[in-house]
Image 1 (cartoon, helix red, strand yellow):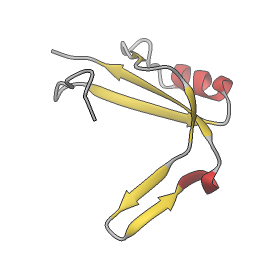
Image 2 (cartoon, one colour):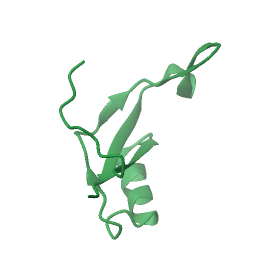
Image 3 (cartoon, rainbow, N blue to C red):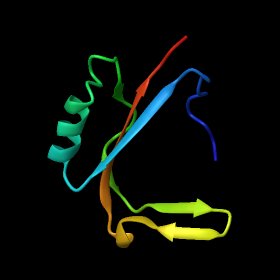
Length: 76
């Protein structure tokens, strides 16, 4: 995989996952992310999530696709 942006160790990322864009927007506002200078990293879309751990993998959200939006605050 190629890496488009070399992440600085001080960069901070927050991904909000919800059933709708309205839920994600509400949580973005509730956490005050705009005031903390977070901005969207990539386009928002439906994702299926798998959590990998030492013993295997787990399909999150019962395998149902959810909307995910990742926000970042770049430092330094």
